Length: 158
Image 1 (tube, rainbow, N blue to C red):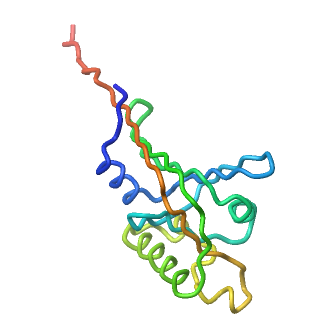
Image 2 (tube, rainbow, N blue to C red):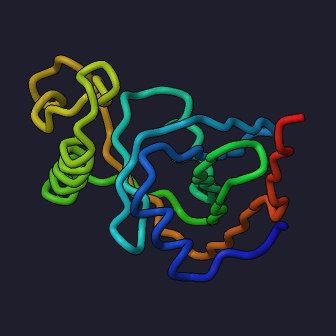
């Protein structure tokens, strides 16, 4: 059975997952990339070293975000949202980094699973790495799910 997620189910998925995919498009090219994120109820917060994703979002700030949870091929939930990229600086950037760090601390992920790039808000000023914190303000959100309605039956031994 395929169906639509309710708004509370959409919000729950956005708050609870760790990985989103951002779709950017500019100059006739589309780029989809997975990112670690935090969700503040209005926007996806991200933090990234300089690269193609940031270059494309700066050129065309209209992006698509996809977040999903997959139990198995017939049991999943997915949210697709459209929004606008905004680069953050100063206190807003530090707050975004704090929220992302808290998000990973709350998940107790291993050191190798947590994002290793740019989680030091002072790294930019110290010249060790060039990064940007950003948010994608979500303007539309839709959600779908699939679940198997098939009832498993076991045959008695012969």
